[in-house]
Image (tube, rainbow, N blue to C red; front, side, top):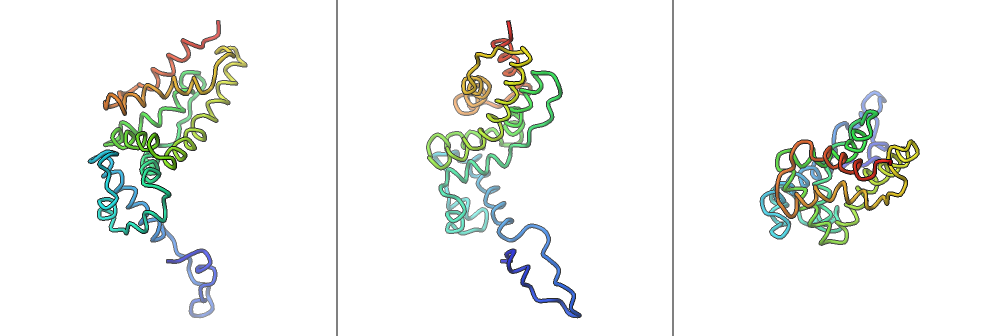
Length: 209
């Protein structure tokens, strides 16, 4: 497998021209992508309790040794597989409800794509059940939702759109709790507009008086 050092130290081609650098995904990237896709298939078919690493390795034509080398736990791999389905947040415009919705709607989009709801359900169960998986999930929530939401709510409070007495973690639970409940407890699909409804409910609760 080529590494950056291998490419830099490659011998010149005939005539003294430098060797062409390898383009496209590396073998390891292709293998990792195949493992994550196989993990999503296994998650959707057998859930967290019935998840089989052997099945993932067979589906991806990879060794279990490779899987355990790349992920600290099976739960962490499941969370990675689910997070790969979640798109980037779209632009939220200027309306407060649209801007809040834009931060959480990627979860709705992932849940409404193919078997995304089943994959996310397994990821949530893994995050609750496995230390490393929980750390990966919380890191994503912190980076992609908590931090930008904190900045947005501070701006809205300064403009007197919402009250200043909100607790950030309470807001996150209010916005995300219903979708997590729907996925894990109700085992139900997420309807279109679900996240917009949660944003509207938050604004009704915390709107400036």
